[in-house]
Length: 335
Image (tube, rainbow, N blue to C red):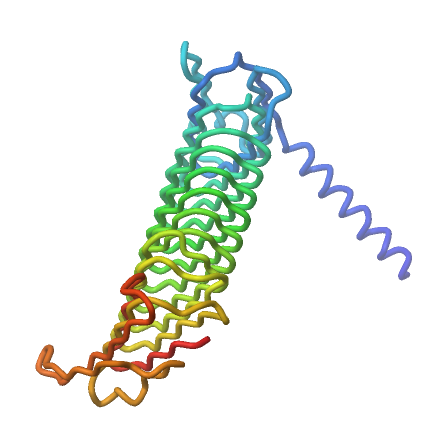
């Protein structure tokens, strides 16, 4: 009886697999190489790889009704346009596999399709509603705008611009500049050489191992920067999130660090501390200022009707300038 049931299950699985294979259809196209490739999908995922020659190869796998799934292909002298189209409603899914020449310019627009690219030199300009991005081993320029799509970017050389309402950003091994704006997405970055400019309403920012200048602003997210070597003036602002920064070498650039109610920690990790230091907090919180040195001057003044305290010191030189403020949180300088 058990063998009979097992046989029935196996036959059902085979039947299901056969039905699926029967429903799956393909479209294959070959185009002459174009500098610009425009891709417009509704829900199709798109995978782009390097072509072995100067031609463009497209393979579409889909399960929609063939009479209702009518993608369009338009060739012009300087660009190729690929567009997902439907002639009526149909249930199913599709996957677009592209192989393109090096140094192409890809314009990708989609409602919900994902984009995956690997091992290419190219420029990417993309606008999606909710599709995710998985990009690896790329050299070029990336400009992406999405409502809620997440992005993973590994082993990249070039400049990145990423604008998202709630998408998360994950980067590892990058040489180039980053400009990122999000309402609530989180950012995790490892091993970045380049300048970073990030603006977030509530997302957290975590960066490990970077060399460059950083301009980071968040309303309520935390800012955590580990093992940073600044090569330019940097600014960190948070309304209520904590800010934690640790250095990987001597700092020779101006730092401005401020938060309304979060705590601030600046850890020099044994590197030389020098320059002008200015720490500001509410007078009632003045005991929550910690540093490995005694301040030379302490001043009490009024701001927004509150008594504030400002402590300053010059260590060897007047530069670089390090200014730290927290209205109600603690301030710690460590070495």
